[in-house]
Length: 54
Image: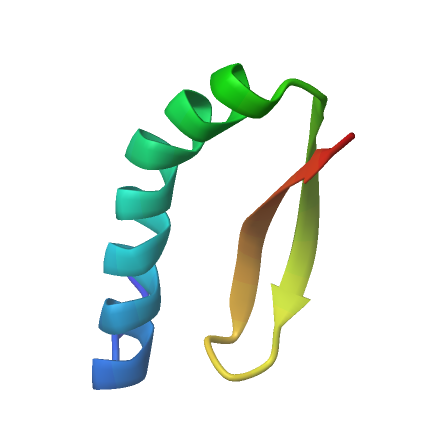
C-alpha cells in the first residue's frame, strides 16, 4: 500500500470532488471528455486527468 502524504491526500480529495462535479458541468457545456493517465512523480504513482474538449 502506498503511503499517502498530506499533498497526496489533498490531491486525491480534489480528484474525488472533481469526479462528482465535472459530469454536471460537461453536460451543460457539451463537448467530449478525455481521460488521460499520467505518472505523478510527487505521488510516485499513476493518476487520472480528465479534460473537457469542445
